[in-house]
Image (cartoon, rainbow, N blue to C red; front, side):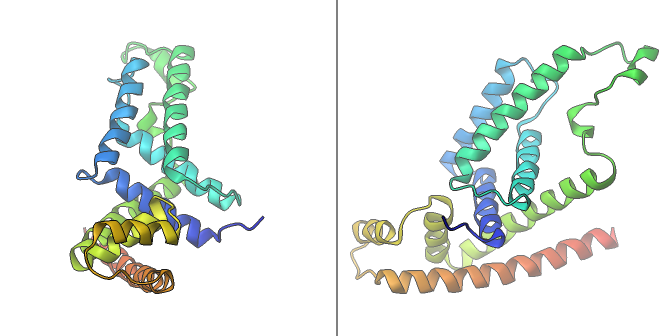
Length: 215
């Protein structure tokens, strides 16, 4: 069975994350709402935020790719992982209930608040890198969508929705009154679009890093 190259896996993951973070995407709203509902279900609203859960899920996704795992549908994988993270946090809080912050016992607690789980060392570096990728990709996709909305939509159908090229073409035929390109042409356009998007991403990434250095 063939497997997707790591770069291709990361491309699809990043596109999915960007879609999840898009406030104008109705499915993204539903995704975040489901996480918030799960947080409320476990009575963690004062301890956990949806964006924290998504950040941790992204970190685990990168780790899965580095371990050579092949994920076919990232949105479903991320949703299940987010739910597992909320459940893990609930179990952790039950094992280590909160104490009076003035109590000396707080220093001996084996667990830390979620937002500090990756504060130190290599884990901190990984989560910061993951956050940077999401921010830069979100900006790149927004800029590319403004420049080339049709190609951006094409990439979304292929990379996020995981539609076949034939299904994408049939969808375009239904949506357009003009002649729709062949599957081969659509595939070539998407390939060129990914190259341009990657260049745009790297340019934005450089600007992001420079801005962080000058702060």
